[in-house]
Length: 122
Image (cartoon, rainbow, N blue to C red; front, side, top):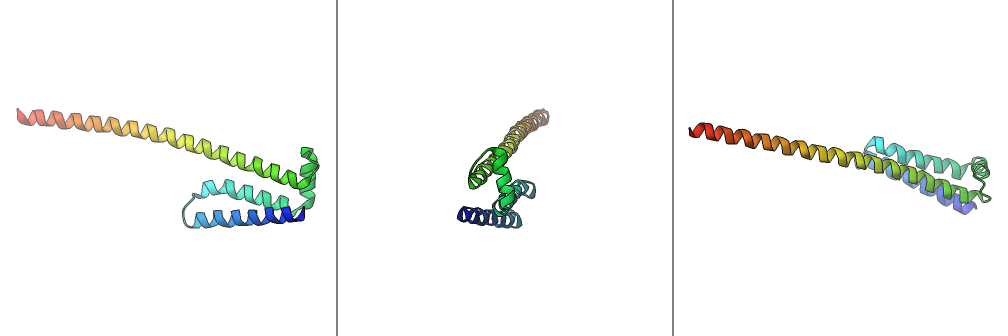
């Protein structure tokens, strides 16, 4: 049990360091890093606090506390992935809308250029 908790602690610390490094180098935006940092800190607290882990396992009805950490980690990351799926969907919709607006503007510009050319040729 202690080895698994040590591994979870190490993975949490690595995730925190990786996210902070990515924010510093501008590979990830700050508002998106909050979800990852929250998940990593939650895992860190659960892997280091035996009392919190045992109470979470008892609440979930899981006999083995390390299994509760793995279960909670899976749930946390599913929530983070769902949040990013929503963000990506919104960005895709905004991208489609922007492409449509650009197409309309290009159409109007072409129309104006054609009308100017016909007026200049008269």
